[in-house]
Length: 408
Ligand SMILES: *[C@@H]1O[C@H](CO)[C@@H](O)[C@H](O)[C@H]1NC(C)=O
Ligand SMILES: *[C@@H]1O[C@H](CO)[C@@H](O)[C@H](O)[C@H]1NC(C)=O
Ligand SMILES: *[C@@H]1O[C@H](CO)[C@@H](O)[C@H](O)[C@H]1NC(C)=O
Image (cartoon, rainbow, N blue to C red; front, side, top):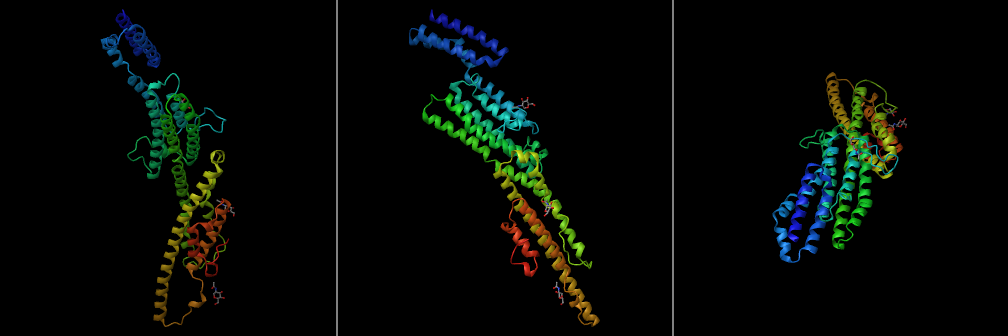
C-alpha cells in the first residue's frame, strides 16, 4: 500500500517535472516543496518501517527524480540567471540609471543598480531555498566580486591607456572623469546598502542558524561591502590622472619662455604668462561641474583636490627645473664663447653694462608664474607652501632676496 502510494507520488512528480522542464523552471521551487512535503508524508505516515523507507528510496523513479531534480540543478539555474543578468549589465558602456531618481541615496549607474537588484534576488522568498543558503551566500559574494573586478579591470585599462589582456574593460576607456564621480558615489552607496539593509535581510532569513554561522555570514557580507569602499582611492587616482594629463598639456607651454627671452633683449618680465591660467582649469572645471557639486562629498573632494595639486605641482617643478638648468648651461657656454672672442679681439671687458642675464629673465618669468599658480591653488583651498615640490620650485626660480620666505 505505502509502496504503491510512493510510486504514484513519484510518477506524479515525474510528470510535473517534465512539465516544468518544458515550461518554466522558475516554478521549480514550488514543485520541490511539494515533493519534499509528500516524501516526508510518505515516510512518516505511510511507511510503517525503516525497511519500507529504504525500499521507497531504492525505487528507480525516486532515484531518477533526485538525480534529475536535485537542488544542485535548481541552484545552477538560479546562478546562471542571476549572475548572467549582472554580467550582461557589466558588458555595456556606463549607463545612467533612472530608477529611484530623486532619492539622494539612489544608485546612479545601471551597473550598480543591477548589482543590488541581483543581490536582493538571491534572497527573495521565491528564489531562496534555505537548505542552499550557503550557496546563495557564496553567489552574493561572487556578484560583489564580479562588480569589483569589472571596475578594477576598467581602471587598470585606463591607466595603461588600452584594454590590454582584460576584455570587458572597454567601457573605462570611453568614460570621462564625471562618470567616475558617479562610480565613487555608487561605491559608497552600495557599501552602505550591503552592510545595512541587505545584511539585515539576510541575517533575518537565517535567524534560526547558530550564532557561529550568523557571525560568519555577517563577517563575509561586511567584508564584501568594505571591498567596494576600498576601491574608492583607486577611482580618485584615476580621475586625478586624467586631470593631470590635461594640465600638463598647458604646462608644457612654459617651454616657450626660453624663446621669449633668449637673446631677444626683452626687458625683465613683470606679469605672469598666459599659460598659467590653463594649468588648474581642468581641475576647476571638474569641481564646478554639475556632477561634482551634486555627488562629491567634502572629504572626497578634498582628497581629489589635494592629490591633483600635488601631482600637477610635481610636474610643474620637473618642467621648470629642466628649463632653468638648460638655460644656465646655454648661458655659460655662450659666455665662454663671448669671453674667448673678447680675448682674441683684445677688447676690455664691457660685460658689466648687462648685469641682468637672459637666464635671470627666464627665472623671473617663472617666478611670476608660480606666484600666480600659488594664488590659484589657494583659491581651490590648497596651501602651496605645504607642497614640497612647490618649495623646490620656488628655490629654483626665486631671486636671492626672495629665497627665504614663500609668499605671494
Ligand atoms: C539596466 O538597463 C537595462 C537595459 O537598459 C534595463 O533593462 C534594466 O532594467 C536596467 N536595470 C536597472 C536596475 O536599472
Ligand atoms: C587664477 O587666479 C586669477 C586671479 O588671481 C583668476 O583670474 C583666474 O581665473 C584663476 N584661474 C584659475 C584656473 O583658477
Ligand atoms: C645692475 O647694475 C646696476 C649698476 O651696477 C644696478 O644699479 C642694478 O641694480 C643692477 N641690476 C640688477 C638686477 O642687479
